[in-house]
Length: 236
Image (cartoon, rainbow, N blue to C red; front, side, top):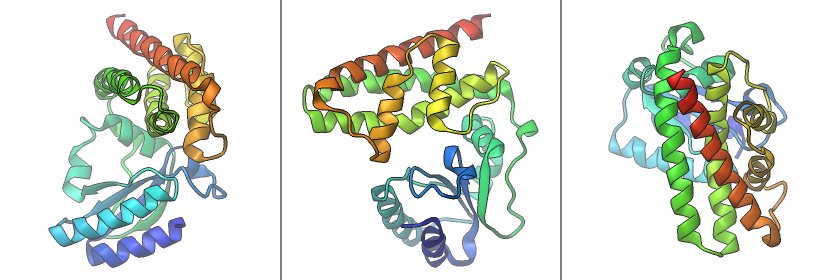
């Protein structure tokens, strides 16, 4: 499914209630990217039929190698800059508007508080670390599930790394692997396992079975160092 096809299907599902469709993150400035997209969908209202239709679209979109669209009502979008500060900052910094109606506009970066970004980042970085830790224990030595775990967590790690880089006063790189390198330099961890997880997610480089334990270990260790770095910065 292409971005144009996604917008067409969203229009069919939501009709006049569809206000905005925005690509954000690493692929927003790369028109050649065919997958790995993060998409925001803003609607006036949601009912059961619209939720069912958008759910089917989201599953197809995910099967095509993308994150499930972030779907919000207009009221939620406008009021969530404090609790979803990371997402709002990501969207403000790098976006491509595919559809806009009814006065929809991306929120400017200046309206998003660094304090809100830090608060969300502290919570979500630790939550992600605990989820990865539990996932490693749950999947055991099953190679397929190990790869799935890494692929599923790769994009979220990049989003959190971008937030940490912003809070350091630097600008996050445009490309996801480069973001991991920046974060690794900032927090003192090896970014290689995160690049490998991104390759797994994108379907460009399957992690060999013989390397899975090392990649999982490095991914977990990197998250631990990132969480510790964010905590140190908060105390400072």
